[in-house]
Image (cartoon, each protein chain N blue to C red):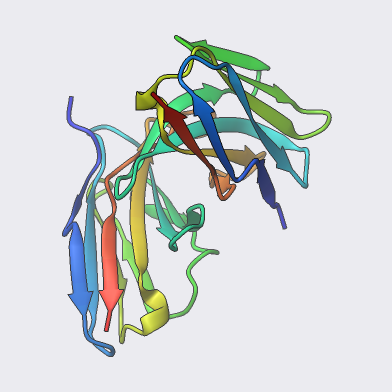
Length: 112
Length: 114
């Protein structure tokens, strides 16, 4: 059974810092991967999708990469802002299955 | 354009009652998913539809859970004889196609069973 670990579980940083969130899969055969943010009491907002033919994706201050040989992904956030405070979740799909398997998330707090 | 919508947003049910949760996916989206999220956890897969066909229901926790999408658009997740352990947020997601497509999530329905 696929399991996803996200490290760290929580992170508190001052505004302006660059930071890295990590995600790893027990089964490295990941077809594609999405990163989401979740604000308290809200649904999930999709941030980035790394498709099957890709290794990296960028959107604004966010950059995500996926190493398929190891089953590890990182989300890099540049110049963090208080508005980035949220829980960040990674989720992967395996070949032949449409469902996403999620980690428990990293709770990020960016202090002004 | 409109995103995925879910109703009701909050539902309180007494133990033993039946509940029905509705999901309106993004118009034209072929794939529809239901996930369950317990407090402090990541979402867990329940079931998947491609158009009106339910292709994967491996995540449904018991036969009290039933989902349908009869016309390939709106979907309903029904829980019969609710139990306290059913208390969770139920999330619906849709995607444009099959395979390498982004999943878009609705705001969720928070179910509390008392």
